[in-house]
Image (cartoon, rainbow, N blue to C red; front, side, top):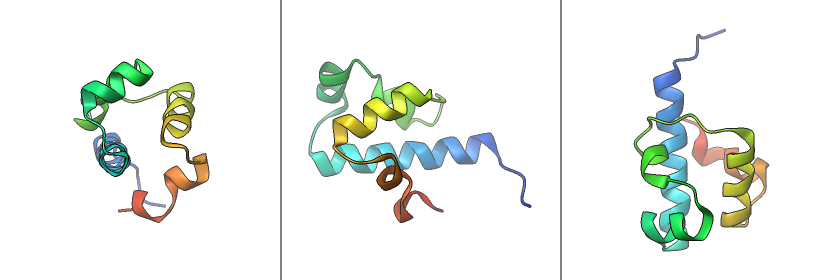
Length: 75
């Protein structure tokens, strides 16, 4: 089994959140205003998020947890 790199995994998370936010057509500031989540920190790949924050993101983007981790999150 390949060892996970925290930095690499956080960058994957960062790209996925940025992708979803772009698809929704909102700025980081508007997304923050809507959710209270600091998207800039997440999208820089410097912040590991909690399960609760992940669920809140899924609710905001109107997707399931499964959809969050679907295909485009890989690689």
